Length: 508
Image (cartoon, rainbow, N blue to C red; front, side, top):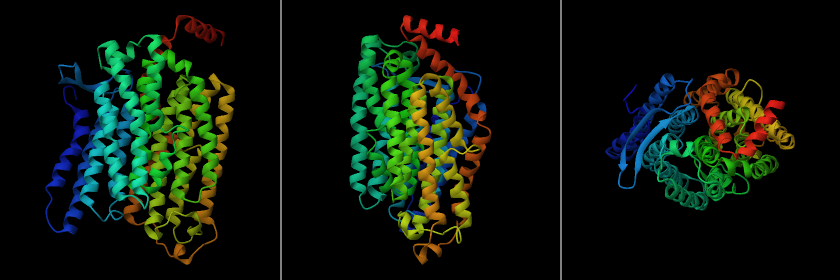
């Protein structure tokens, strides 16, 4: 694979599908059907490329692989640089895996402006993959911010009754934080003379600048995660977004904030990251407990899963800033697991929404009788969200709590209550919808999973169980990159702090 621009092919092949979509002609129903077929066919190419990337990836190396480096804005010193390490590779895989599933899930749900919808999704795929592959800060910013536009349109055009409000709230929240990150990137460039992420990771800026730059980047990543208290855009966006929009929003877009912390905050601003660790821990614990309690009183299924996402992202930020091997590995695994499980839960809500056109739990009940296959699949994802051993949800939460206990016992104990609360609201949701007393006869008349719906959910079931039983398929490949990240973080600490750390390790 040496010399072949694999990452560029994965990232930009969806744009070929966009061109094909724009050339489709015919009657509206013919255009709609052909648009779905072209979009689905096109989305398979990045998936195939992602599989090749996984197969040829050297899991023993911490270096960036499949690197592409060519001139871009030469006068300013910006370069087109793409590459993946053990951390970013799995986020690329998650993006290219979920996109075809999203297109299939919209096959019957989207009936208006189908071509434009598919164009938005394919452009979104290009921008998501580019975000995780970019090795230049300017290129990263272009992809990172570009994601807002197609998602803004997906929510604003094909969303629910309050879609315009939700899309503007989503756009303004995330844009405001990102403006501060752009200022931070300009300061980084002025101080170092380079936009190469690899160089910046190896050479942290001066201590007096780190704190301000850390806050500038934090403003963007915290909103994208989203962390408490800047999480309020997420429930509105999820409730109003079409099912496929919710899947990609929860599955991939929320992970960009965590990826930013791993790629920028820890290695580039290690001293500031250590200084603000307690601040992040407090926000993470509040997010885990508070949003879990809010989820307990929700009547809307989508809103409940949206609040659960905020709680799960609290575990991610907790794990990242422990700066321990178990904590960081657990945070990455939790992001990947949550991408699969929350995406699947939104698909499950979409299945019953397509039948009754309501997300209110009170309208359902007793559907285990007429939808046994659906009840079984829904149960697997619900238990994965709870963190049942044997599912991928358990591995991430367990590693995060293990890493947090090594650093701060009190925060770990408080975070562990989130596991109990998570079980409470997810079991409540499942009991009311699947086993509760039937609210209306039309709920008992709903047909079970169709063949299309079954094949959409089946790969997600397999992955959730497979990663729960064989987590080292992921952990072994990310371990060298995580070790290097932690090494960069520790090397960037002041000498006296490192001396204390070394003494503590020797004592242990």
